[in-house]
Image (spheres, rainbow, N blue to C red):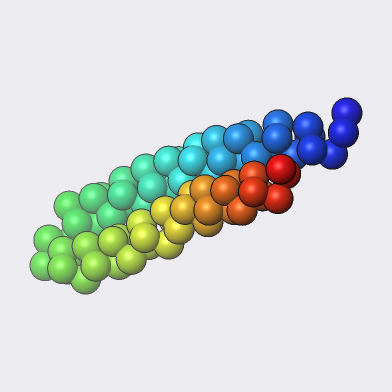
Amino acid sequence: MENVNLLALSLPLALGLAALGSAFGLGKAVSGAMEAMGRQPEAIAKIQIAMIIGAAFIEALTIYVFVSLFIFKGNMS
């Protein structure tokens, strides 16, 4: 296979893998935050802020892969 074909095959797979990883990471993070909020209702504000910041970092992975997909796709032609 040519390098272009391998790149064309690997880019969507990388995006799917990043989305899958983000989904599992977000699920685990939100689950842990909800359990913590249930155990300590007085700390809901701090836990919620930390959860939202963490979720933004987790989602950044998928966004970076999505952007790099278009960058590499432009280099293929």
